[in-house]
Length: 319
Image 1 (cartoon, rainbow, N blue to C red):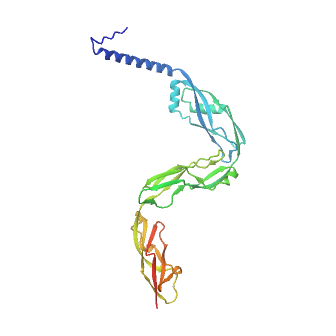
Image 2 (image 1 turned 90 degrees about the vertical axis):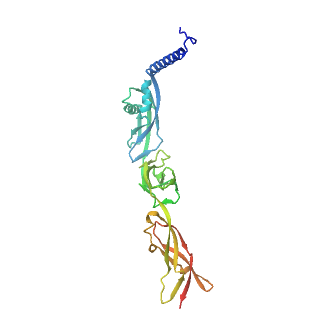
Image 3 (image 1 turned 180 degrees about the horizontal axis):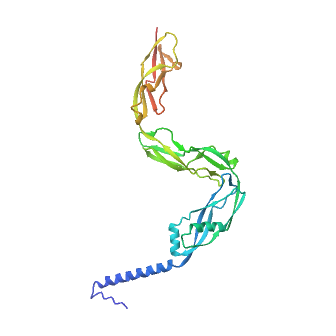
């Protein structure tokens, strides 16, 4: 029996307490080692991925998961949980209308994955899986980019969003393929975008088991650039070719156009790239003066948000 003498030796209590804690820790370690050295069983659920020819598809929804009972020491099962890739097993299929997948095949698949782990695969459920197939048709449809983009102030797209590939193959029954016109990507939301983006994005997974996609992802290229305003002075022209010697004069003769342009194109953008016309067909007479609206009919593709000033001009014929 241990004697605790608090009065005579003040440091004895702390020393004895440390001895007790160390003893408990050693006992705990031995208990853990003993427990984890014993044999246990564990049930693991694994996804089944079927690999099949492009000429067939499922006519009935197949079983997508299997449960395996595995035995091993506690240490081995812990290592298995942390390091083994037991999420999915791939099963190859042929083009037969009815195929039988045995539990033996599933067990062998799992055993090959667990070859480096000293565990035993005891059984699998279900023990037999029947696969029903039918002829698959194919259709090429465009990819629809499902996005929501918010740009940083003064930034915007500089050109169309490009998808690579921009269309995919869809495999399934003809009756289903006739109903689809495009295939969407998974939704993506981007905020405060101020740089160009190149990334892979997943296509929306088919909701029906009998539908397969030729690709799982597409590459998205989004070109972004800063925009700024530029003011140009462009001479006004008539909307139609004038015949004869009739002389005329516009007041004013020059239109100012305010455009938003990519920063990289700012210096190279000149007034000659635009054409402003006075629309003779839409002219009105006001106080013996002809009023013609102005329109911009030629501009570079990369220019946006055009504002013209003035919006109308006065036309005078000179006799």
